[in-house]
Length: 85
Image (cartoon, rainbow, N blue to C red; front, side, top):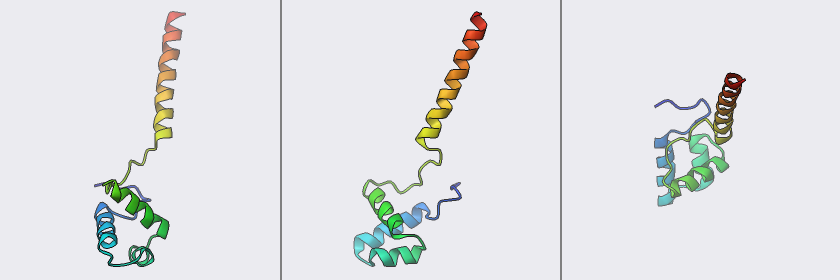
């Protein structure tokens, strides 16, 4: 599986963090130190795990995808205008 360069935690790491958290094996600070990430990152992993989202998210965000769609649509409209003149 190809992961973004910014992704430090694999889906397996995320599941392990969730398991440790659920069993009470360690507190948030200990988990963060163990996986070499910040505490807010651990909180985000736990929040997503509650929704059963262990896989990494798409690296292309919604704003970029909308912009790309808008540019394609604009190019299509321009081609139609050039053809009708």
